[in-house]
Length: 260
Image (cartoon, rainbow, N blue to C red; front, top):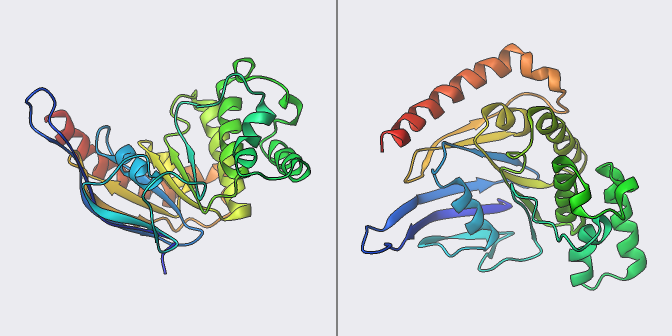
């Protein structure tokens, strides 16, 4: 049985100022297994983020449904941890208090909350910054805080919407390794949206390629590179061959998107 089932899911946005409706997502079906790491890859505007928002319960589908552990998703919930490209931290809270936010909302007792926060700050390398505020942190440190906050709640699935898109290349690569290390240890089910082909291959066990708008599935590609993965795998022949295949798939869709 799938951990997450996206079944015939579509989203059509109503017309604006007398224009035509916008078909952001065509009926889409994806099954994500327990402990799977699935990357959603596609050109800008193809409906990747719309799909993720529907899974998160932040938007309502036009058709279809989302099932998590066989239960319908109808609204946001603590069983889904969401990490956005923008860091979405509470600027008035410290790093520790940001990580603790969901635990506090659930009523987790202070001693247990303190233990969980301490564990996650250690795992993302921010113990020394526990009492800092977001404005005192670099972009990478802010995103590490956001990831720790999402995972401290122990969600059933982690949803990431281009979480490293605003970072420089070096920081982005380090954040990929951090996230991959966490997943290799915990095997949390992950749905990861990106437009970066190398990032998708390096992290995921499957890459789902979407077409230009209106988005639909073009390919569902299994990544057979073994775990644990070291960054040097990016120079392997198998990695290069998969990158070449996905680059061609995405290029065709990017051209279609550019030409309307």
